[in-house]
Length: 314
Ligand code: UDP
Ligand code: MG
Image 1 (spheres, rainbow, N blue to C red):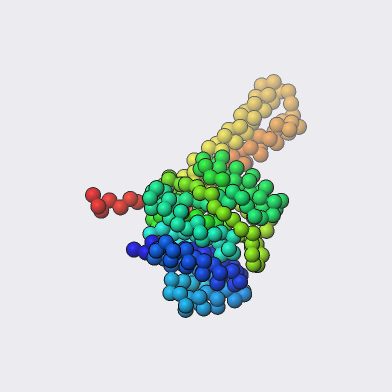
Image 2: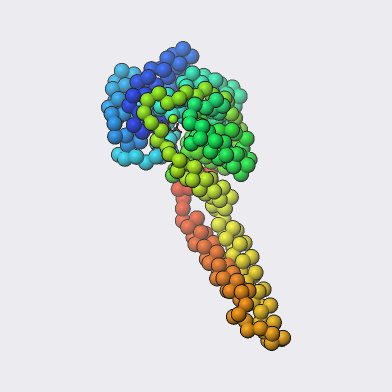
């Protein structure tokens, strides 16, 4: 079996690719690894694809996948994972910010220390402090607290996996920021971290602007919700629907008693009346959302990736 598959998602990185390919090749040769590099061209509009084809002609370990348009880093990783056949799968950005020199140590952590996945930590980061480093600290703190996974740098592009992990998980939307969470939720619990060196971008420009943080937090809430209630949405919507509904009902019972037993108020003059109506309506809505959620989750098979241990050896 091949030792390592390196998966590199790339979007308009033509200048970096030759250097990256040569560097990876050198590291692999020095360590006697059998390997492949799967370069996933995420719909580049520059000459990235021509460059990949050219590199593939001189080095048979380099393979390419090309998207017709830009689908995003997550989709690129997902396709690369499907194609990967190495025992250990390593993902790496194509822009030379991640160093191929880290590959042997990551490989050893998977093979010798039996980690399911190891995430890089760009401890000393060479990006803009205000647009990247500070928001990223905040983002990682929230991800750490809400997922219970003790990583400093969830979104690091440099990661290593057992092959089994990448064949089980599905990365879609912009979920590449949360692969450790997706992996944990699929049942892979041994997740490690390794500090990795990080360079400033040598060529080209960053492909993610400040919107990344808004999208990032929205995706985090999706992940947390889906991992907890994805298969049982009624337990979330039903609970909140009932609470809100009964809150409204109690208000109304109180208002009725106040009106008919004590003849005190004109019901519609009281703010409570409106709060009661709104609560009842929202409660019913939440309940209906729960039913719809159940119908949808019943019909979706694609998001159900179960981890099944192979017992054939027993
Ligand atoms: N990338 C991609 N598709 C996209 C955006 C980015 O494949 O839609 C790749 C990009 O070419 C690079 C990696 O994802 O190899 C990380 O992107 P970038 O370096 O722009 O992110 P940053 O390092 O600024 O966080
Ligand atoms: Mg980069």
